[in-house]
Length: 576
Image 1 (cartoon, rainbow, N blue to C red):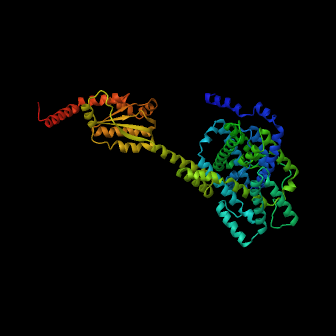
Image 2 (tube, helix red, strand yellow):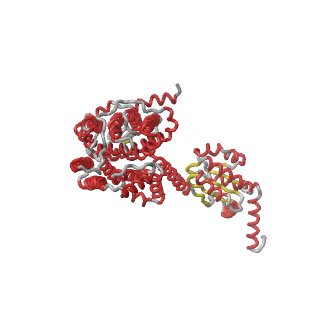
Image 3 (cartoon, one colour):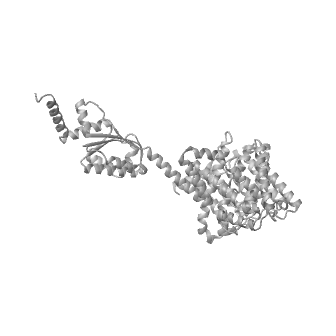
């Protein structure tokens, strides 16, 4: 067994629940139970709505909320995280359902769960913190737009048109509504959305989503509104766990969708856990354990017919605001939803689809933090570009491509900004022990440059251009002590510049090479070149003395001194 394998095996126990988790759940059980009940009331319409939107039905959303919610609460890395179906995941799942069908989605969920467990074992959780804020804000804005557009067919009361592009589906739904308008569905959806949005401003602690859904259901049933189509029959309980949906022959074609689902689950779950930490004092999630818990949750949920799940920011925020202090709250949320599945399935089946569409429409609107977007857009042009480019890509392409595009653009702009910090400035020679006459003569034949900042691929070629435009001098001194970082490209460009100057008869001396740069310079042969020419010095004064010695050996300094004396004598009336 290799040492690497041994370290991985030793790391795995740290991902499992510990006795301290149980102790935490016993400290404030009443508050946690109340918080869990409140979150369950908020989560019910969302779970139903996201299940319907995903294409697998309301029962899939409930199964996900119950199974994934319980497993992630037990094994996850956050005491306050609430997991289940989310709008962001729905955006990714819709095209997968359209192409591979329900069994494809379930298989993708299991594959993504295995990938998340692998990421946890490899300790990849810490790297999610490097996703730039404009990318996060951009895809959140894009997701909100996509979720809102996905509800258009249900809001208008028309069958969902064919297609997996949300803009195309939305346009076709509007065309169908124009031909066969259903104002009842529109009224129900708009009423639910308005009640949620207005109610949240009036009494933020009241779960107006469930209030509005119950009211819409009662009115639709009492008035016999034919345009308010209900969810339909739901199973009275969770199905028995099964692996019959797995299609081993399609694993290759499902790999790319599984990677997309795993990436989204990791990103959204860790973002949600970070939000929970920020809303509390003393709470700190374990990112690797969180990935492990989400991985197990996504392996378990498809066994019961559930869709892939992630940490849910909205439900987690409700959990924190209502006083949760341990995992007991999230477990209670899952248990309450399980009771609803077993005891109230006939009642849930009567909820109008338009009412759920109104819930998700209001959710999409509330996802857009106008103040945060305005602040990000005003920060820098780069931040604004990344934000809106990510949002547009989310809307036009899909979430994973949008995040990749956002990261690539953010990385390119960051490199550009870092490269612009590199400076190549001419600096005056140190007087040292030279006379004024010698210093003037040295200045005629020696130029000293100081390189500040990074010398890497994004800035190296600008350095080469400036370096090779040096005027007609005999010696160039490069002061390297302020170079902050250097890569192979920077070292190769430096070597090329030395060669170009040498071919013009100009000697290049280098001083102040830092220990961290030696390995890079040595790998491309720069140090061998300098050693051959005897051109490396520890300090700049030593390099200046070396330059003077070179000029004396070649006779340049002697000739220059003689010329200077001749000029002086001519000005004073001839030789004495």
